[in-house]
Image 1 (tube, rainbow, N blue to C red):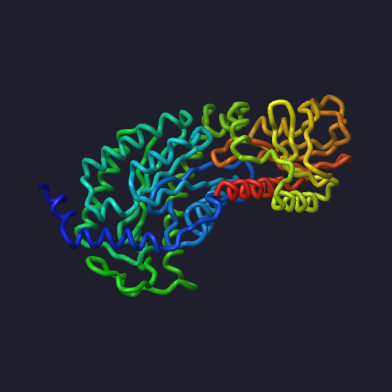
Image 2 (tube, one colour):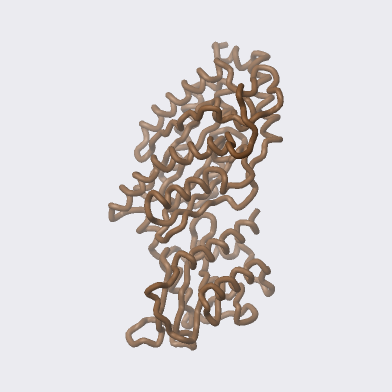
Length: 417
């Protein structure tokens, strides 16, 4: 048996791993909508997947964890909107991350951030076996992305990764974590379009907790959650590091003619859209009150006669909810939303009766719609506002239109949850 194997089977190591597993069942983690959105238009799309930092241990909302914090920072840094979703894998294992990604359509993401947690270092996992698992994950992941989409493997210092559980690393586990970070550097370097990000250490990032038990201890000088929340400092530092690493990758992508952003804004496969709509269960006679409330707020915000959340099916548009009345079908020949979903940008018509416009001639003259997406970025319909009178759209609050579409997407995610 090698040294790592002997250590793993030692009572102290087994106790540390058992304690980490026990704390994982009692430590708070988010159960809300798994994405954050930074204000703006032309949003970048980033998927955070993995263990540790992706899970949001120690927080109660993804808005307080990586998705929310990274999305807001990216928007400020780039001047564009952002959409940062998370697919958390709390079991702490690399093969489980790969399994979680198997059922996800990945071509609509610009950057995928894979986070690795603490358990493999605590259990003193063989670096060679860990390298095989990471290599297998990247070998499976990269070909499923757009040709110049990027992957970032992010690893946190072990003490920080454990701090959300009120634990501190033993010297042997900390040494092993450094070995695994070196392995990550090497494996990532062997894959095109993959980089390794070693997240920075954050001083005094542990919340105060009860006694940690055998082989682990609470950080000395811990401060309780409050005004100077150590967990908040931790996610702030991680989000800042991820943003600083990802923003230049997005900038380089957008300079290319084959960028994921341009490809994502092209028309999407109709069969994929119809399958996504069928899976949503949205085509029903009685829409949920939450969708109606969003449409009502959109109509009031834009001071229009009508607002709706419409799905675009194979031969007709279905109003899941409309402020003009009950759910109803509309031929695609009369649908503005069918044009909205052809790209990832808003579709705005100041006056549909104006000569030369290729739009339906109905009683609608002003229309503004924003695509509504599923978790993986598939466009299934639109949130729209409309009016029988034309209007000047020079100062139209397009960002506000996106916010209402995002509210619809949040409700869709709550239905899934």
